[in-house]
Image (cartoon, rainbow, N blue to C red; front, side, top):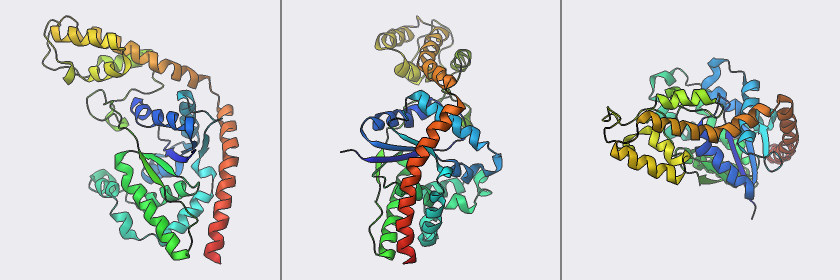
Length: 325
C-alpha cells in the first residue's frame, strides 16, 4: 500500500556526498513507491542560524535544484518550502500550548548541544521548541512514515507523545502518530576520516567542479605509515579507500587493494583514479543542476504549494473546530 512520507532539509548551503548517501539516496527509493512530501525547512534554519543573515530565498531555490538534479521528480513528489504554508506556524503555536517544557528539555539533541559552549548563547525559545515545529510539519500531512537517522528517534517519539496528548485533551483521534523509518547511516566519512560536515571543512559537495574534487582528494588523509611509493600500505586505514569502495568498480577496487598492499601503486595515482570516479558520479548532478533555472524551480514550488496548502488548510479547519468548539 502507498504510504504518506514527509521529510525536510534545512537550506544552510550546498549539499555534500554525505547528504546524498545519508538522505537523498533513500528519498529516491521512497518516491518510487510512496506519496512523498519533501520540504525546505527554512524556519528550522533559523533555530540555530538566526544571526547568520541567511539569504533563505536563494538557498531554498538552490536546495531544490540539487534535489531535482539528484533525481527527485516533481511529477512524483510534492516539493515545497515550509514557510510558504503558514498553517505550519499555526499548528506549531497550538502544539506549543499543550507541550510540557520538561518534555523538550529532556531531548538528547538539545542537552548535547547545550553542553557545547558555542551553543549556550543560542538557547532561544525556537531552539528549545523546534521539535514541536517538526511535529507540526509531520502531522499536518498525516505522515505515516518519517525517514530519519538514529539520532532523530527521540524527536519522532516526542511527536507521537504530543499527538497522544492532543487526542486526550480534545477527545479526538484526528491526528496520525508517525512511524520512524531508520535510514542507513552514510558510510562515507570526510576527507580527514571524521564525519563529513561543513563545519569540519572536509566535504566534497555535489556542485564541486572537476578541479576542486581533485584538489580535495589530493589532500585527503592516507596511510600515515606509508612514506615512499614502494612502502607496503594498508587500505583499511586510508580515507581514500573509503571512496574507492563506493565510486570505483569491483575490478578497480581489487587492483588498487592488492597493489597498495604490495607497494606497487603510489598514493597520488590511487587518488587520481578515485578523483576521476567521484567526478564521474557528480558530473551529471552538477550539469543537471546548472541547467535548471530559478523560474522553473519557482513553477515547481508553486504547483506543489497549492497541493500542500489545500491539505494544510483542511487539517487546520478540523483542528480549530475542535479547539474552539
